[in-house]
Amino acid sequence: MTSLPKGPGKFALLRMMFDLSKTLADLAREYGDPFTLPSAFGPMVIAVAPEGNKEIFTADPDTFTASAADSFGRVIRTSVLVTSGAEHKRQRKLLMPPFHGQRMRSYGNLMKVRAREWAARLAPGNPFAMIYTTQAITLDVIIEAVFGVDQSERVQLFRTEILALLEAFSPFIFLKPLQHEFGGLGPWARFQRGFRKLGEHVYALAAERRANLNGREDILSLLLSAKDDEGKGLSDQEILDQLLTLVFAGHETTAVMLAWAFYLLHKNKETLEKLHAEIDPVAEDADPESIAKLPYLEAVVNETLRLYPPVHVIHRKLARPFTLLGHALPVGTIVAAGAFATHRVESIYPEPERFSPERFLNKSYSPFEFLPFGGGARRCIGAAFAIYEMKLVLFSILKLYRFQLLETEEVRFAHRLGTVGPKGGIRMMLEK
Ligand code: HEM
Image (cartoon, rainbow, N blue to C red; front, side, top):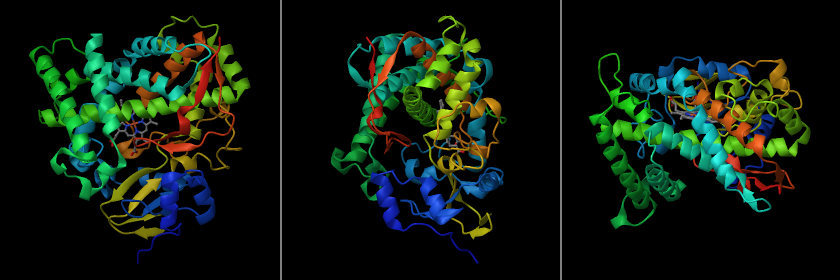
């Protein structure tokens, strides 16, 4: 016998699409653990306590398919985000090396330089939304890391096309009946045009690179030369889909987290002072490696990821029947580890709404208690890269500038492209 756990009706979905003031933590308190939330792609059963997250992350990966295939499947058809099973495993193996160890650390100076450059464009006394600055930094970093384009006009070209594609992005492109070009009109046609244009630039660059791959360390070049165990590489279509996945997954999330970090630090002045006490004695040109080892900076980054994970639920779709916390669930159900709600379980995180980096200085948390990057066979490929970037950007900007937070009330949530970010983007002002 299968039965879905209790949960709110369809109205909750509609309400959450427009207003996220009722969070998953509130729903968990109301309906128990796990609870069922209606979603545009079918009912989603969400676990909250670490036991449920553990059942999901440690299950045989073939229990699930990628639920993102329902939304992104027609957009980035061959991307690691939407494939499952052996194909997914093969792609991860090819994609992961640039995001770890020495390769990942080689992007440290680029992260510092771009942070300083974009911050230098801010005019003292002029209000601005922090998310635009953090997004500009993370977009430049990911474009340069992924495509290895160093002439600034080339970065500019990719930046323009990527921003145009982001602008053409709308939730309507996920609706199957609207996925037609309708003689070039409508959101799907507009999105496809942007996608094709960007594709032409990527293919042109790939052709140039193929002609001379020697000594190149950018991700495009690494992917062009990567081979799996059977000697098979990635096709051009796969390379395009993977690169665009990395660009979008890799800049938006980090930009959102950085904006939240600036918000939390300036709302909690004593924390900002503690961070300054750690970073002020460190030279501005200190090597990225030693900056990344600063313990309070690391705790600030972790505590921001705990309070405001940009992906509130880590979901998969059942390819086989599965029992979650005693509930037998049928094939096709979406199951999710409820990162946002788990991060607010009081027995794990006392005073959960309080921003307190200290909790990460004195204690470590299991991967089922602290899961901003998901877990199991689909855990975020860019986690180490993102943490490194958050640390270096915070260090580089806070070292040189002082800001005033212009938000007078608690900042609410807003749905963004695949993430949940701060409504209004965190309004701040550079001090004179
Ligand atoms: C603070 C920044 C980031 C956060 C919070 C974040 C979070 C996540 C989460 C929650 C998932 C889903 C994991 C799961 O299903 O278990 C994910 C997947 C993914 N992320 Fe990130 N991410 C961040 C930055 C990045 C960066 C910098 C990159 C690459 C440059 C990246 C690339 C990916 C990819 C390719 C996947 C799909 C993995 C798969 O399905 O196998 N992410 N990320």
